[in-house]
Length: 405
Ligand SMILES: [Zn+2]
Ligand SMILES: [Zn+2]
Image (tube, rainbow, N blue to C red; front, side, top):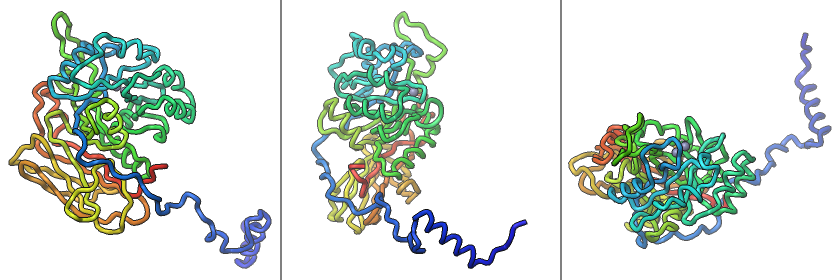
């Protein structure tokens, strides 16, 4: 049976316990606790890069060639020729590194077909491990074997190797099978749109929002993850050949605003987040800007990060490229992972503007998704139905994100 002690006695006993454990005999001890990690006002942030000196480039960041064992009829030459034909500016061929014991340098990159005068070829591979998959993007050859060798080590070891290799590491298909099962502290971007089947990506978007909300400034990017090409000449169809007409290079397409048309500028743009994703190479491109001082001139774009002023900011979403002129586009704005507003836009160059005041202290981010009429992709005709009314999505505009986090 429990004995009911008077409250006073219980209170005294509690105080005694606090004293014994050397915590404090001051009952207000808890309120004097200071969290060294508390969000405070940031110092000076790096300046915003030029809004005009650059070029929009479109690309594919996840495709498998014949060096991935389960691919079919997909030579490097075929991938490059197709990319050129549909206006793709850059490609990263990401073969499974475990299929070649980590030695992509003597397989994918050493393939005589791995060259192009028209399409920028990034160096990379799909890091294919027991704990999931990640893509590497690099402007130069790097020692992929070292990353492969540490795949079963602790994240702190892997993170150090990644840093030494000076590569961009990206979390692949972050939800579902073979999801990226490592710390997001060591990645620069996340595959928020994998394959033409847009509806599969809801959980990837949720993970992205969680990571962004926690202060991790990760770029969202796309990747078709295509493995199968259309048979040509003496090539024989396989049971997977049908996929080439549903999901191939450019479904989806990742746009970058690069400082120049070079591989390094593409990788840098992927890292800094001046990136949006469209359902295919012909679909409109989503651009997202902000006018910080309300002078009518846009001062920053998606991927950029500034200190909040406490004053209202005007945001602009616009679609560039081939829009369906008499159609309505629906623009959903997400603020800090939550729905902020829904707007409609029409016309040849649909534009939507809205205003909000990001908090003076603490992080805020805004990103947008655009839905509307689908754009035909004649070379991959079945993809239009799979991506449905999803036109494209932006990367966030950031306020008060700590660059040293
Ligand atoms: Zn994968
Ligand atoms: Zn893959």
